[in-house]
Length: 212
Image 1 (cartoon, rainbow, N blue to C red):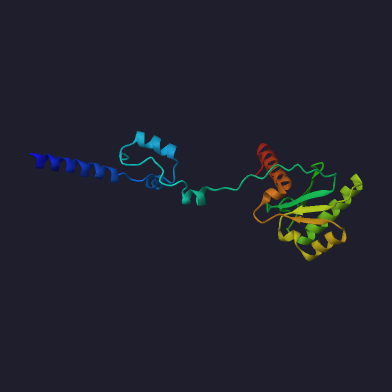
Image 2 (cartoon, one colour):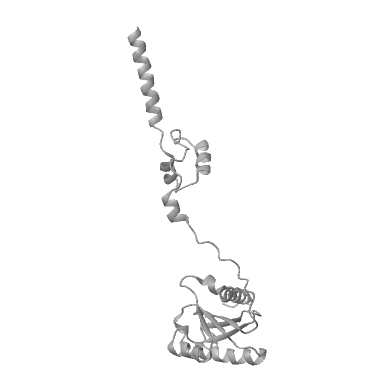
């Protein structure tokens, strides 16, 4: 009888050990559910069957998959810099769009940082020559109207801004060129936001006018 009791106790111990080792780690279920959070997994376990052996205790502090797949860039802080009118000019080229009545397919914008005044040029192509001639026209107009000189030219790294003739003109005029880092439009946010505003207004006008 004692032997049978001992065997029974031993079998209970084995069953207990088997139950403890059969618990599946949190990381496994975390990955099965597409790297879901612990809170969501706990809620899921209460509402479904088949997760009785799922451990809800994290077996490591950080998930490498989450770190690589979910990380995002921190937002850029709002600019607090102040410039006098005409001193800093933001520019960007948008398009191509469907040809206009005058066969123009691109919109070139120049925005004064100090006043946020925006000026648009409609171009048939994105050639550097046309962009440069438009900038010369804009520079002449805003300097004459405001009495201030353009000192900084900020743009992305589009080829229309990087020609030798464009660079030479800026150097001759003593204008500092500022180029954004690739894939970082936030650094020229004034121009990017203006482009979005223009496009939204154009779509709204076309929609209410029943035009394509």
